[in-house]
Amino acid sequence: MGQRIQTATLGAGKGGNLSVDAQNVQIIGRSPNGQVASGLFASAQLNSTGNAGDLTIKTNTLLVRDGAQVQTATFAAGKGGNLRVDAQDVQIIGTSADGRVSTVLVAGADFNSTGDAGDLTVKTNTLLVRDKAGISVENRGRGTAGNMTLNARSIRLNNNASLSANTRSPKVDPTREQATININSQDLIITRNSNIITNATGENVIGGNININTDVLVGFQNSDISANSDNFRGGNVRINTQGIFGIQFREVASLQTSDITATGATRELSGNVQITRPDLDPTSGLVELPVNVVDRSGLIAQGCPADQGNSFVITGRGGLPPTPEQQLDDDAEWQDRRRLTVQQQIGQTKPHTEITTQTLPTKSDTPIIEATGWQITPNGDIFLVASTSNPAVHNPRNQPDTCQSRQ
Image 1 (cartoon, rainbow, N blue to C red):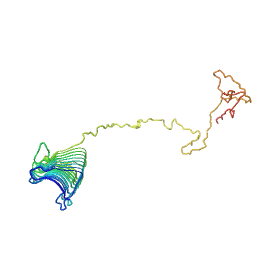
Image 2: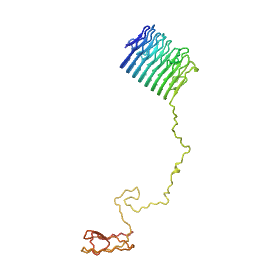
Image 3: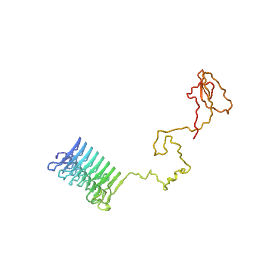
Image 4: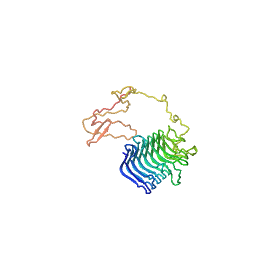
């Protein structure tokens, strides 16, 4: 605990750059007495005039916790270095064991400095800041503060976590903002008293701006987004999002709600809050329903009354019971009740095979007589006959069909 890697300038020369390129970087805790933080540092020390070097970290996972620090700073007239992190996953967690010192990523300047602080940039897939830890750009001296830029797929602040930008400098550079936070993320979630905040302190010191571009912004449990100035005009908050949940603009922050504010020394000196949502009309594409509702019963065709012009006659069981409540029987009967009135002549059978031919009538009104048998010629031809003197009958019954009269 308390191990440090550091570059610094103590005079007029520029401090060296510090670059870390590793698979995983873990920076944890402080010295046993709590006075020295484990960390990575690039600084311009007291009484120096040279600029501090830059600090660059390139890794798969960066874990900073338990009061450790990653910092670029100036304590003198020189400019502070820039801090850049390029990682797949960044986690900034917790405080020192005694709870007095937060875990931080910071690009800053000390109280006695006159130099400007550097910028802080984080590019990552996921960024988690929690349990009183923070990421900060600040200048507590007379120089300008740097700007913070976070580019991530997902950013989560939880349990008193913070993203902050603080300045005391009245300098205004028309080509460059100071103490401004820029966030570009698919989702930004801040919960449990966490904050995204810019603070300006001092006469004529304008508050820094907050620019957020995110698909979804969620803020719960008294988590705030604020661009404030204690003694002058507040900063501006610009949010471009597809949806905001749990947090909203208010002129004055509340201790019970999640708020978006831009307060100044007076109400007249408040900054601006601009929230931009997609330019979509939620009513577009909707079909207006008719005012007069059609009575559907009038569209139904009226059939014949069931008790007029209709009948149901039971003529016999025929395999079906008269009513649905009765069971099917297996003794169903069928009778052909048609009346047959055709008279027939029956031929006599003789024991020889002579064939007697008959001349067919030519008159069109000759009645058709039903065949009662058949004869086979020597050639094997078959003739249907009504009567014959010498039939060779192959009808087993050789009898005409008769029908019973209806009872």
